[in-house]
Length: 117
Length: 107
Image (cartoon, rainbow over all chains, first blue to last red; front, side):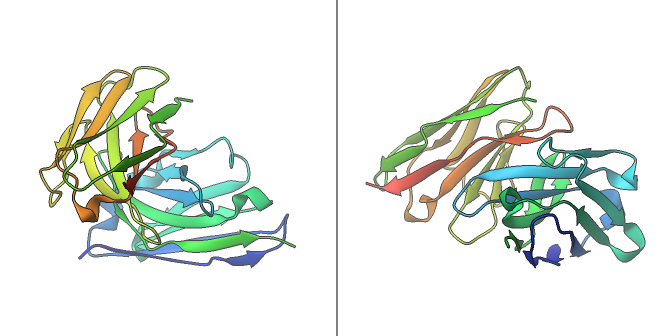
């Protein structure tokens, strides 16, 4: 059974940093592209960051470019999102997603990030 | 970046109704479009990819069509379990984009 379990969310002050983790199991992690998608409270979905299998390609939404970095550790079957210079508008549930043919076929349960003083 | 516009934003319907949701892309995305269903407090669930291919396990009352810039999601006979929010997503480039969502409510 495919499982994606996010962790690392919490309350952080504006300008602070946070690292999200996603532990993957039930599939061969290194063979899949992965992404992070977020959803602000009561709002729609926003794709945040993408990383290809092998980590040769990384892409970030304009809203987070230069502040967020996606990376992966295939030996640990884990995906990460390093978030720096956090802003109030980054407050959201962050989902780890597995990609198959560029669609998100499996989603984690999400981890809540709150940016507030 | 490619923008995705869904309509309507909210849709009121009854059980048994045929429901259609439209998604328009700001430029051609061929058939690189997916549809997701999300229920309150839950992660989204993939329904359709490649504009019209039903994901495994998704009921056949769901169907998708379109290409280029205009796409539709149709629910042939709305069931109680289908009241949810639906999102389209383009993946024509590394930068994926979601539509703003369509909430299907009970009439």
